[in-house]
Image (cartoon, rainbow, N blue to C red; front, side, top):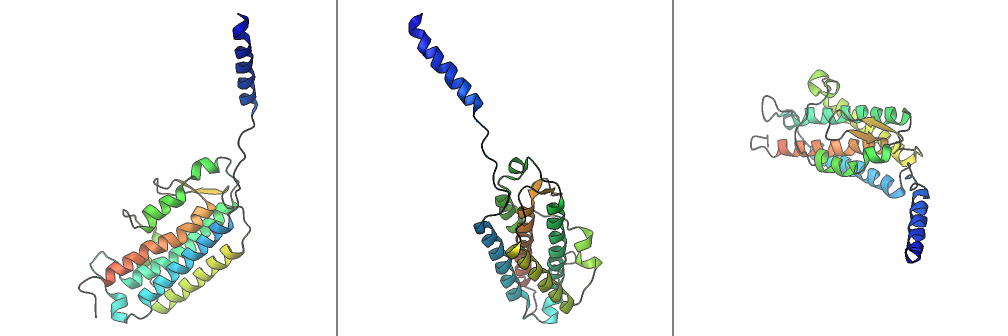
Amino acid sequence: MRSGLPLLVVTLFLSTTVGALPPPPAGDPKITSEERAAAIKLLKDTEKEFLSLVENLTDEQWNFKPGPFKWSVGQTAEHIALAEGLLFGVVQQSLASKPNPDWETKTAGKEVALERILAARTGRAQAPGVIQPINKPMTRAEIMASFKEGRARSLKFIETTDASFKDHTFDNPFPVFGTLNSYQWFLYIPQHHSRHNKQIAEVKANPKFPK
């Protein structure tokens, strides 16, 4: 009996000690310098690609539609410009919400999902009516001015903000993404833009695209 006593005491001690350990510390809800730099790079890269795709097009090329239910380059550009404003508003709405105590669990790994699904143009989705180009026709000059103004605002914000991004969340209407934190919503802006840059490139690659 005595030979088993030390083992029992050690086991009880370890069980009590492990049970008394404090929970792991919560992650920092603020973005790191690397995360800030990544967001800035995405904004600048997608803008540069976009301008290279559209700035030298003729009006005929700008308005060419590859099919009756397909968007032209101009319509896609308008959607990009309108979406920038809408998504920036969602970021602000998310930041204004109360902190989500489950933010780490709810939003883990979503940056990867955004890149793999959204930016890669996997699947199809219906754009909300407010950012449908057919519902709010704009001139080419208005589209480009709106885009550049919105992108400058997005860049200035991410370059200067000290907001606590990650513990503020807002649900995405697409179940594949679910709950996103404010930083992930901000990344949605350039990832969405990258998706539609690919769409513009597809239109330009159409055999019937004007020369």
